[in-house]
Amino acid sequence: MVRTGTDAGPTLAVVAREAGVSVPTASKVVNGREDVAPETRRRVTEALDRLGYVRRPRFDAAKSPGLVDLVVHSLDSSWSGAVLHGVEEAAHDAGFEVVVSAGLTRTRGGRPERGWLDKLSARGSAGVLFNLAELTQSQYAWLDQHRIPFVLIDPVIDPPPGVVSVGAANWQGGVTATEHLLALGHERIAVIAGHRRKMCSSARVAGYRSALAAAGLRHRPEYLRYGSFDEVTAHRRMLELLDLPEPPTAVFVCSDKMALGCYQALAERKLSVPDDMSIVGFDDLPEAHWAAPSLTTVRQPLSEMAATALRLLVRIMSGERPEGTRTELSTRLVVRESTGPVPGSA
Image (cartoon, rainbow, N blue to C red; front, side):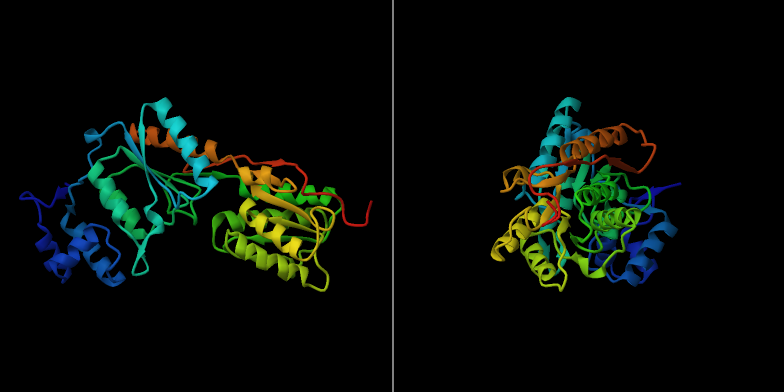
């Protein structure tokens, strides 16, 4: 029988004694704190399981049954705006209100802040959506211990088994972008990706390489550049490509924001898009339409992804379990002015 830390079961002091730690240390483990050594965490967790101690959840969906939380990486981009729009529309249709937090970007001592966890528990929201989140194992454990339903939107890394997530068909997007450039006659095609370990980066690069292989072209390692999803890094990577003995004639850039940095690098070298270099982005953010020239890009359905995640969360909160843990929405190419034939081929 599952027991809680009350008179009917072991107290936290009993658990601490069993694990050979102090009560404050045992409390940190129960509350998902980061500042506990892995071996200590293991001993406390084993003692919790062995003694049948389960912290009584402070979470109470009945306290605010019409409230869900959206925890985003940041609020300073059109990406976040698209996600928020999708969540709000779907939440309105489902009769829920949304509380937005950007707590995952704040750090203390190199570790994620716990403020959003504490606020989440105090509010008693019915569930949580995490956008671009990179949760730690202890944070997953905290959510599980408090029985809080949650869904990930475009997780940064592969989530643990059983965690429900929604994303885009990144591999197919990489294929589509590269095939578009191949159809225009390009063979020297480079790719500028985001962080190497991020799921979306690795999938888009894999799609790029698959399209080259299908066309009978050898992947050139010097044409593959990793960085961050920002203009500054992309600017540097584009300059590196331009300095190669045989520069590419086209580049697949794994985000629209990065593509703007590439535009700047080309302008500094007195090169034009697409006459000297074709560029394909990824996301189809508003910046892609307003760039000069307008950016050919792979549309990632951000609002639809967010709305799908909200609907999945509602199902989980009602006691259902989705058929699969990973939902992928299709991507599509949006052709604008930044791509053209190989220079000198006309």
